[in-house]
Image (cartoon, rainbow, N blue to C red; front, top):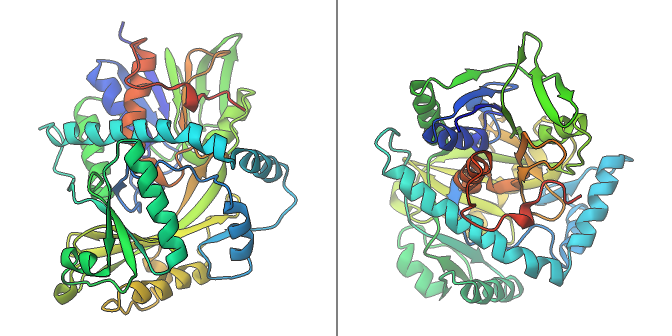
Length: 417
Protein backbone atom coordinates (compact mmCIF):
# COMPACT_ATOMS: atom_id res chain seq x y z
CA UNK A 1 0.00 0.00 0.00
CA UNK A 2 1.50 3.32 -1.10
CA UNK A 3 1.35 6.12 1.44
CA UNK A 4 1.80 9.84 1.76
CA UNK A 5 4.77 10.52 4.05
CA UNK A 6 6.08 13.73 5.60
CA UNK A 7 9.71 13.72 6.74
CA UNK A 8 10.63 16.46 9.23
CA UNK A 9 14.31 17.07 8.61
CA UNK A 10 16.32 17.41 5.41
CA UNK A 11 19.73 16.23 6.60
CA UNK A 12 21.38 13.09 5.35
CA UNK A 13 19.08 10.89 7.47
CA UNK A 14 15.94 12.53 6.10
CA UNK A 15 17.23 12.47 2.52
CA UNK A 16 18.18 8.78 2.67
CA UNK A 17 14.80 7.97 4.21
CA UNK A 18 13.12 9.80 1.34
CA UNK A 19 15.33 7.92 -1.14
CA UNK A 20 14.17 4.49 0.08
CA UNK A 21 10.54 5.54 0.51
CA UNK A 22 10.52 6.87 -3.04
CA UNK A 23 11.96 3.58 -4.28
CA UNK A 24 8.92 1.90 -2.71
CA UNK A 25 6.58 4.28 -4.53
CA UNK A 26 5.47 6.39 -1.57
CA UNK A 27 4.62 10.10 -1.99
CA UNK A 28 7.16 12.05 0.07
CA UNK A 29 7.41 15.62 1.35
CA UNK A 30 10.48 16.88 3.27
CA UNK A 31 10.10 19.79 5.68
CA UNK A 32 13.43 21.37 6.72
CA UNK A 33 13.88 24.08 9.36
CA UNK A 34 16.87 25.60 7.53
CA UNK A 35 18.24 24.87 4.06
CA UNK A 36 18.90 21.27 3.10
CA UNK A 37 22.52 21.74 2.05
CA UNK A 38 23.70 23.65 5.13
CA UNK A 39 22.88 21.28 7.99
CA UNK A 40 24.95 19.16 10.33
CA UNK A 41 25.65 16.53 7.64
CA UNK A 42 27.35 18.96 5.25
CA UNK A 43 30.67 19.34 7.11
CA UNK A 44 30.87 15.70 8.15
CA UNK A 45 34.16 13.83 7.82
CA UNK A 46 32.44 11.56 5.29
CA UNK A 47 33.65 8.33 6.89
CA UNK A 48 31.69 5.08 6.53
CA UNK A 49 32.81 3.26 9.64
CA UNK A 50 31.57 -0.21 10.62
CA UNK A 51 34.71 -0.08 12.79
CA UNK A 52 32.91 2.37 15.11
CA UNK A 53 30.92 -0.30 16.93
CA UNK A 54 31.84 0.91 20.43
CA UNK A 55 29.22 3.38 21.79
CA UNK A 56 30.13 6.78 23.22
CA UNK A 57 29.24 5.72 26.77
CA UNK A 58 32.07 3.41 27.90
CA UNK A 59 33.68 2.67 31.28
CA UNK A 60 36.29 5.30 32.08
CA UNK A 61 35.02 7.87 29.59
CA UNK A 62 33.49 10.03 32.33
CA UNK A 63 36.77 10.32 34.24
CA UNK A 64 38.63 11.15 31.04
CA UNK A 65 36.00 13.73 30.16
CA UNK A 66 36.32 15.43 33.56
CA UNK A 67 40.09 15.75 33.06
CA UNK A 68 39.63 17.15 29.56
CA UNK A 69 37.20 19.77 30.83
CA UNK A 70 40.09 21.55 32.55
CA UNK A 71 41.76 22.18 29.17
CA UNK A 72 40.21 24.82 26.87
CA UNK A 73 41.69 23.10 23.80
CA UNK A 74 40.76 19.52 24.73
CA UNK A 75 38.64 17.20 22.53
CA UNK A 76 35.74 17.17 25.01
CA UNK A 77 33.91 19.83 26.97
CA UNK A 78 30.62 20.09 28.87
CA UNK A 79 29.49 23.59 29.76
CA UNK A 80 28.51 23.35 33.46
CA UNK A 81 24.92 24.50 33.91
CA UNK A 82 21.86 23.68 35.98
CA UNK A 83 19.76 22.21 33.23
CA UNK A 84 17.33 19.40 33.91
CA UNK A 85 17.66 17.85 30.47
CA UNK A 86 21.47 17.84 30.74
CA UNK A 87 21.39 16.33 34.24
CA UNK A 88 18.97 13.60 33.17
CA UNK A 89 21.04 12.87 30.07
CA UNK A 90 24.23 12.72 32.17
CA UNK A 91 22.62 10.25 34.57
CA UNK A 92 21.47 8.01 31.70
CA UNK A 93 24.93 8.29 30.13
CA UNK A 94 26.50 7.20 33.43
CA UNK A 95 24.14 4.21 33.66
CA UNK A 96 24.99 3.15 30.10
CA UNK A 97 28.76 3.34 30.66
CA UNK A 98 29.17 -0.22 31.91
CA UNK A 99 30.90 -3.23 30.38
CA UNK A 100 27.59 -5.10 30.23
CA UNK A 101 25.77 -2.30 28.38
CA UNK A 102 28.67 -1.76 25.98
CA UNK A 103 28.89 -5.48 25.16
CA UNK A 104 25.15 -5.53 24.50
CA UNK A 105 25.36 -2.52 22.18
CA UNK A 106 28.37 -3.51 20.08
CA UNK A 107 26.75 -6.21 17.89
CA UNK A 108 23.89 -3.87 17.01
CA UNK A 109 26.21 -1.01 16.03
CA UNK A 110 28.21 -3.51 13.96
CA UNK A 111 25.08 -4.75 12.21
CA UNK A 112 23.76 -1.32 11.27
CA UNK A 113 27.26 -0.20 10.23
CA UNK A 114 27.75 -3.17 7.93
CA UNK A 115 24.25 -2.76 6.47
CA UNK A 116 24.91 0.89 5.75
CA UNK A 117 28.22 0.13 4.04
CA UNK A 118 26.52 -2.40 1.76
CA UNK A 119 23.71 0.03 0.96
CA UNK A 120 26.25 2.71 0.02
CA UNK A 121 27.81 0.22 -2.39
CA UNK A 122 24.34 -0.36 -3.86
CA UNK A 123 23.73 3.41 -4.12
CA UNK A 124 27.04 3.75 -5.96
CA UNK A 125 25.61 1.46 -8.65
CA UNK A 126 22.38 3.50 -8.92
CA UNK A 127 22.69 5.34 -12.22
CA UNK A 128 20.10 7.89 -11.03
CA UNK A 129 22.61 9.20 -8.48
CA UNK A 130 25.70 11.20 -9.36
CA UNK A 131 29.13 9.91 -8.34
CA UNK A 132 29.48 10.93 -4.69
CA UNK A 133 33.10 9.81 -4.37
CA UNK A 134 32.68 6.57 -2.43
CA UNK A 135 36.14 5.09 -1.86
CA UNK A 136 36.75 1.80 -0.03
CA UNK A 137 40.12 2.87 1.29
CA UNK A 138 39.88 1.69 4.90
CA UNK A 139 40.45 3.72 8.06
CA UNK A 140 43.59 4.15 10.16
CA UNK A 141 43.47 4.58 13.94
CA UNK A 142 46.81 6.31 14.65
CA UNK A 143 48.23 6.43 18.17
CA UNK A 144 51.32 8.01 19.71
CA UNK A 145 51.36 6.44 23.18
CA UNK A 146 51.60 2.86 24.42
CA UNK A 147 48.54 3.25 26.65
CA UNK A 148 46.26 4.33 23.81
CA UNK A 149 47.89 1.72 21.58
CA UNK A 150 46.91 -1.01 24.04
CA UNK A 151 43.33 0.32 24.06
CA UNK A 152 43.12 0.41 20.27
CA UNK A 153 44.58 -3.08 19.93
CA UNK A 154 42.01 -4.36 22.43
CA UNK A 155 39.24 -2.80 20.30
CA UNK A 156 40.80 -4.48 17.26
CA UNK A 157 40.58 -7.86 18.99
CA UNK A 158 36.92 -7.16 19.80
CA UNK A 159 36.38 -6.23 16.15
CA UNK A 160 37.82 -9.55 15.04
CA UNK A 161 35.43 -11.40 17.37
CA UNK A 162 32.57 -9.50 15.74
CA UNK A 163 33.77 -10.43 12.26
CA UNK A 164 35.32 -7.06 11.37
CA UNK A 165 38.75 -7.31 9.72
CA UNK A 166 41.67 -5.43 11.28
CA UNK A 167 45.41 -5.10 10.74
CA UNK A 168 47.61 -4.06 13.67
CA UNK A 169 50.55 -2.08 12.29
CA UNK A 170 53.81 -0.78 13.74
CA UNK A 171 55.39 2.48 12.63
CA UNK A 172 57.29 0.95 9.72
CA UNK A 173 54.26 -0.94 8.44
CA UNK A 174 52.22 2.26 8.59
CA UNK A 175 54.84 4.12 6.59
CA UNK A 176 54.75 1.37 3.97
CA UNK A 177 51.10 2.33 3.41
CA UNK A 178 51.30 6.09 3.98
CA UNK A 179 54.51 6.41 1.97
CA UNK A 180 54.20 10.18 1.50
CA UNK A 181 52.62 11.52 4.70
CA UNK A 182 54.65 9.24 7.06
CA UNK A 183 52.70 9.89 10.28
CA UNK A 184 54.84 10.48 13.38
CA UNK A 185 53.13 7.83 15.50
CA UNK A 186 53.97 4.70 17.46
CA UNK A 187 51.60 2.53 15.47
CA UNK A 188 48.06 2.10 14.31
CA UNK A 189 45.15 -0.17 13.48
CA UNK A 190 43.83 -0.40 9.93
CA UNK A 191 40.20 -1.28 9.31
CA UNK A 192 40.28 -2.28 5.61
CA UNK A 193 36.48 -2.52 5.37
CA UNK A 194 35.81 1.14 6.13
CA UNK A 195 35.22 3.72 3.40
CA UNK A 196 34.64 7.41 2.83
CA UNK A 197 32.74 9.73 0.52
CA UNK A 198 32.16 13.40 -0.26
CA UNK A 199 29.23 14.42 1.99
CA UNK A 200 28.40 17.63 0.15
CA UNK A 201 28.28 15.78 -3.18
CA UNK A 202 26.17 12.99 -1.66
CA UNK A 203 23.63 15.48 -0.32
CA UNK A 204 23.39 17.39 -3.60
CA UNK A 205 23.04 14.14 -5.53
CA UNK A 206 20.22 12.95 -3.28
CA UNK A 207 18.43 16.31 -3.53
CA UNK A 208 18.64 16.24 -7.32
CA UNK A 209 17.37 12.66 -7.47
CA UNK A 210 14.47 13.33 -5.09
CA UNK A 211 13.38 16.43 -7.00
CA UNK A 212 13.41 14.37 -10.20
CA UNK A 213 11.11 11.91 -8.41
CA UNK A 214 8.67 14.75 -7.57
CA UNK A 215 9.57 14.80 -3.87
CA UNK A 216 8.53 18.17 -2.45
CA UNK A 217 11.29 19.82 -0.38
CA UNK A 218 10.12 22.72 1.79
CA UNK A 219 13.02 24.71 3.24
CA UNK A 220 13.29 27.38 5.97
CA UNK A 221 10.12 26.03 7.58
CA UNK A 222 10.51 24.95 11.22
CA UNK A 223 7.63 22.83 12.47
CA UNK A 224 5.83 24.89 15.10
CA UNK A 225 3.22 22.39 16.19
CA UNK A 226 2.01 18.83 15.65
CA UNK A 227 -1.74 18.20 15.49
CA UNK A 228 -2.96 15.09 17.31
CA UNK A 229 -6.17 13.12 17.19
CA UNK A 230 -6.16 10.40 19.82
CA UNK A 231 -3.64 7.77 18.75
CA UNK A 232 -2.48 9.40 15.53
CA UNK A 233 -0.95 12.57 14.12
CA UNK A 234 -3.21 14.54 11.80
CA UNK A 235 -0.73 17.12 10.55
CA UNK A 236 2.27 19.34 11.15
CA UNK A 237 2.03 23.10 11.29
CA UNK A 238 4.70 25.51 10.02
CA UNK A 239 4.52 29.30 9.98
CA UNK A 240 3.01 29.18 6.48
CA UNK A 241 0.86 26.08 6.26
CA UNK A 242 -0.46 22.87 7.79
CA UNK A 243 0.69 19.69 6.07
CA UNK A 244 -1.04 16.33 6.31
CA UNK A 245 0.04 12.79 5.48
CA UNK A 246 -0.56 9.14 6.34
CA UNK A 247 2.82 8.69 8.06
CA UNK A 248 5.32 11.08 9.64
CA UNK A 249 9.07 10.71 10.19
CA UNK A 250 10.94 12.88 12.70
CA UNK A 251 14.52 13.07 11.44
CA UNK A 252 15.53 16.56 12.51
CA UNK A 253 18.72 15.84 14.42
CA UNK A 254 19.02 17.44 17.84
CA UNK A 255 15.69 19.24 17.33
CA UNK A 256 13.94 15.86 17.28
CA UNK A 257 13.89 15.99 21.09
CA UNK A 258 11.72 19.14 21.04
CA UNK A 259 9.35 17.67 18.47
CA UNK A 260 9.08 14.40 20.41
CA UNK A 261 8.16 16.38 23.52
CA UNK A 262 5.11 17.72 21.66
CA UNK A 263 4.07 14.07 21.34
CA UNK A 264 4.78 13.41 25.05
CA UNK A 265 7.68 11.14 24.10
CA UNK A 266 11.02 11.27 25.94
CA UNK A 267 13.86 11.31 23.44
CA UNK A 268 16.89 12.33 25.53
CA UNK A 269 19.72 13.79 23.47
CA UNK A 270 22.40 16.42 23.90
CA UNK A 271 23.99 18.39 21.07
CA UNK A 272 27.65 17.46 20.68
CA UNK A 273 29.05 20.43 18.79
CA UNK A 274 31.89 19.54 16.43
CA UNK A 275 34.09 21.56 14.10
CA UNK A 276 35.85 20.94 10.81
CA UNK A 277 37.88 22.89 8.29
CA UNK A 278 39.61 22.22 4.97
CA UNK A 279 43.24 22.70 3.97
CA UNK A 280 44.98 22.16 0.67
CA UNK A 281 46.58 18.74 0.36
CA UNK A 282 50.36 18.67 0.40
CA UNK A 283 51.18 17.07 -2.97
CA UNK A 284 54.61 15.87 -1.78
CA UNK A 285 53.18 14.38 1.43
CA UNK A 286 49.79 13.23 0.23
CA UNK A 287 47.45 11.54 2.72
CA UNK A 288 46.10 8.38 1.15
CA UNK A 289 43.93 6.86 3.88
CA UNK A 290 41.37 8.53 6.16
CA UNK A 291 42.47 8.36 9.77
CA UNK A 292 41.64 9.18 13.36
CA UNK A 293 44.39 10.80 15.44
CA UNK A 294 43.48 8.86 18.55
CA UNK A 295 44.75 10.88 21.51
CA UNK A 296 43.58 14.14 19.95
CA UNK A 297 40.26 12.70 18.68
CA UNK A 298 40.82 14.40 15.31
CA UNK A 299 39.53 12.97 12.03
CA UNK A 300 41.50 13.30 8.78
CA UNK A 301 39.81 12.79 5.40
CA UNK A 302 41.33 13.43 1.96
CA UNK A 303 38.78 15.12 -0.33
CA UNK A 304 39.48 16.05 -3.95
CA UNK A 305 42.89 17.68 -3.47
CA UNK A 306 42.04 18.94 0.00
CA UNK A 307 42.00 17.45 3.48
CA UNK A 308 39.16 17.86 5.96
CA UNK A 309 40.22 17.93 9.62
CA UNK A 310 37.50 17.65 12.25
CA UNK A 311 36.95 16.99 15.90
CA UNK A 312 35.82 17.95 19.41
CA UNK A 313 32.70 17.06 21.34
CA UNK A 314 31.34 20.21 22.98
CA UNK A 315 28.15 19.77 25.02
CA UNK A 316 26.85 23.35 25.19
CA UNK A 317 23.12 23.08 24.50
CA UNK A 318 21.80 24.61 21.29
CA UNK A 319 24.64 27.13 21.09
CA UNK A 320 25.81 27.22 17.46
CA UNK A 321 28.59 29.77 17.96
CA UNK A 322 32.17 28.89 17.04
CA UNK A 323 34.59 28.46 19.94
CA UNK A 324 37.98 29.15 18.36
CA UNK A 325 39.80 27.67 21.35
CA UNK A 326 38.39 24.28 20.40
CA UNK A 327 39.36 24.80 16.76
CA UNK A 328 42.87 25.73 17.93
CA UNK A 329 43.08 22.39 19.71
CA UNK A 330 42.43 20.61 16.40
CA UNK A 331 44.94 22.73 14.48
CA UNK A 332 47.67 22.23 17.10
CA UNK A 333 47.25 18.45 17.12
CA UNK A 334 47.64 17.93 13.38
CA UNK A 335 51.43 18.51 12.99
CA UNK A 336 52.07 16.37 16.07
CA UNK A 337 50.89 13.39 14.02
CA UNK A 338 51.49 14.68 10.49
CA UNK A 339 54.69 16.80 10.59
CA UNK A 340 54.38 17.75 6.91
CA UNK A 341 51.07 19.51 7.69
CA UNK A 342 51.99 22.65 9.62
CA UNK A 343 48.39 23.84 9.69
CA UNK A 344 47.72 27.50 10.35
CA UNK A 345 44.81 28.45 12.55
CA UNK A 346 41.86 28.85 10.14
CA UNK A 347 39.86 32.03 9.94
CA UNK A 348 36.48 31.74 11.62
CA UNK A 349 34.74 32.11 8.26
CA UNK A 350 36.45 28.91 7.10
CA UNK A 351 35.28 26.81 10.06
CA UNK A 352 32.21 24.58 9.84
CA UNK A 353 30.35 23.61 12.97
CA UNK A 354 27.43 21.31 13.57
CA UNK A 355 25.29 20.07 16.44
CA UNK A 356 25.50 16.28 16.48
CA UNK A 357 22.57 14.56 18.26
CA UNK A 358 23.93 12.28 21.00
CA UNK A 359 21.74 9.77 22.81
CA UNK A 360 22.85 8.75 26.33
CA UNK A 361 23.71 5.16 25.39
CA UNK A 362 25.33 5.92 22.03
CA UNK A 363 22.63 4.10 20.04
CA UNK A 364 20.39 5.89 17.53
CA UNK A 365 16.61 6.05 17.82
CA UNK A 366 15.04 4.22 14.87
CA UNK A 367 11.47 3.01 14.64
CA UNK A 368 7.75 3.50 15.13
CA UNK A 369 6.05 4.98 18.20
CA UNK A 370 3.69 2.51 19.88
CA UNK A 371 1.23 5.14 21.13
CA UNK A 372 1.27 7.09 17.86
CA UNK A 373 1.81 4.36 15.26
CA UNK A 374 1.84 6.71 12.27
CA UNK A 375 4.96 8.44 13.65
CA UNK A 376 8.53 7.20 13.19
CA UNK A 377 11.76 8.49 14.73
CA UNK A 378 15.17 8.54 13.00
CA UNK A 379 17.61 10.48 15.17
CA UNK A 380 20.44 10.30 17.70
CA UNK A 381 23.29 9.20 15.42
CA UNK A 382 25.94 11.42 17.07
CA UNK A 383 29.00 11.66 14.78
CA UNK A 384 27.83 8.83 12.52
CA UNK A 385 24.89 10.41 10.72
CA UNK A 386 26.48 10.07 7.30
CA UNK A 387 27.86 6.63 8.10
CA UNK A 388 24.50 5.18 9.21
CA UNK A 389 22.11 7.17 7.01
CA UNK A 390 21.30 4.56 4.31
CA UNK A 391 20.63 1.82 6.87
CA UNK A 392 18.44 4.15 8.90
CA UNK A 393 16.49 5.24 5.83
CA UNK A 394 16.06 1.64 4.72
CA UNK A 395 14.82 0.54 8.17
CA UNK A 396 12.30 3.41 8.36
CA UNK A 397 11.03 2.56 4.87
CA UNK A 398 10.66 -1.09 5.93
CA UNK A 399 8.76 0.02 9.04
CA UNK A 400 6.36 2.22 7.05
CA UNK A 401 5.86 -0.56 4.50
CA UNK A 402 5.31 -3.17 7.25
CA UNK A 403 8.14 -5.22 5.77
CA UNK A 404 10.59 -7.53 7.49
CA UNK A 405 13.54 -5.55 8.88
CA UNK A 406 16.97 -6.03 7.30
CA UNK A 407 18.51 -6.30 10.80
CA UNK A 408 17.31 -6.60 14.40
CA UNK A 409 16.10 -3.15 15.51
CA UNK A 410 14.99 -3.66 19.11
CA UNK A 411 18.16 -2.04 20.50
CA UNK A 412 17.29 1.19 18.66
CA UNK A 413 13.84 1.40 20.30
CA UNK A 414 12.48 4.92 20.23
CA UNK A 415 10.70 4.59 23.58
CA UNK A 416 13.51 2.99 25.58
CA UNK A 417 13.65 5.99 27.90
